[in-house]
Amino acid sequence: MSDLTVNPWKRHGKDRLYVNLSDGTAVAWADRATKVVTIKVQRYREEALALLRRHLGDGLTVASRPSTTHTSRPTSPAPQSGRPAPRRRVERSAPLPPLSPSEDLARNRPGASLLGTIAERGPSIAQRLRAKVLRQSSEWDNWYTGLEGERRVGRELERLSPLGWRVLHGIQKSNGGDIDHLLIGPGGVFSINTKTHQGASVWVGDTMAKVNGGQPQPYAAASKAEADYVRGVLGRYCDFAVTVAPVLVFVGVASLHRAATQYTVRIYQERQVSALGPLVGKLTPEQVERVYAVARHRRAWLRA
Image: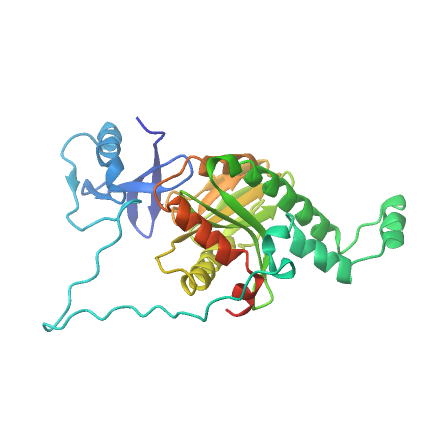
């Protein structure tokens, strides 16, 4: 049996049990009152039902609405009024020019974007040494902490190369932000956002996260938006559909908790990103190389 867990969830008058994978992905849920089960990932149907019966007994009813799986595409809605459903137009851009060394993002090391910002606007070496000797805090402390976090996650991602994965770091976006890491391989494309919170307790919900019970931070929502951005860029230059999944990686935390309903963003601690390595079935080796060739081209991102 797969590593599935059952998690209770109560909100807005609803009382449910969610069946999740070890990474927090929800594969099914059941309404306690009606015993109606919704299957979200069909490959885990029987295992999920068996687990739910242990908690709710017999008499479960599976909802008839269609569910998507990790290996099949969702069907298009039925056309109305006898007219065919319109095709979604994919905006294509002019081919990218030959890749020059100055445009090649494969040369970036983990934390490249942060390192560039610190070099351009941060304290001088003398100022840093003085602050260290006097044990003075600095507004740049968080930047250095974030830089170390990106480097730690980058090292973990580089270990996936023997399994057919390609990884890029510090991709500058046209809107001035950056993508910490982009992982491309047989299991698909993952846009990875790194958050470093040393010794903290972190809870992640559908859109927000809380660090040590503090104010909600839009970590999950931002990760989803970033994945959509990446999907748009890659879709302009690839002649096949490229799905992009958002990932949040927390570095140095003491504990990490996911809401039972959180299944659209993958949530990991830095040593757990190796769980992406065995994933397969999304891209062929040729498609991996094509996506990588586009993604490593700096101009593709600056045109977006």
